[in-house]
Image (cartoon, rainbow, N blue to C red; front, side):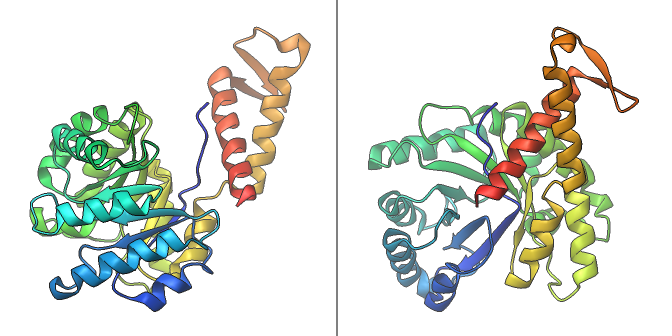
Length: 292
């Protein structure tokens, strides 16, 4: 089983706000997205790029996963953003408005030409109608020897803008798109991170949407405010009961009398090998969270 990296909470931070970049070193977030795109005004792009590069190069963020969101491929800032990101050596680079597998490969080849370290991953914003139609092809471009595509980030606000769909409680108008991206991502070993929840003061609404994303199969949620960190971490963490049950399943299948069996009984319940594999993932995720 591949190494699991928790991505329960993924906090956006404007690259133009130096104080926020410093505060990120203290926040209980699994990942930080240093944003050079939507959160930064055009006349501050150069300054934000320099600040983000300096912040990541300086370090001090512990085990948090560090991601730089560059501006779109078709913008005048993309090339300089990508060059700065390659030099900063983050854990990943988030590319907005990805709409095809060829775009993933194009960015990968540019990073190789820039001399970026092969272990710098790619993340893709899934936020256009075309991306919803091309989700499988985008995911299929993920596996690679360098700059592997590791995560889909749902851009629900942009999807609403581009399609006219309304973001309602339960997000019924978007459920088919969310599920399509989950299926495409899982088919190619790509994590899926849910879109932001705009009303950050609505704690109940936020928690419900986290639970909804978790139940759809997502790994975590992108956040716009530190107040959203604790509930996101809680919802996307396996419960202690789930971990205990998972360990019991694993232990039962390891018993000599159960070797080679496809199904066994544990505490009066029928469990199969597929449940054992799910249990291993649950325990691996819990252990990874504990290591943070």
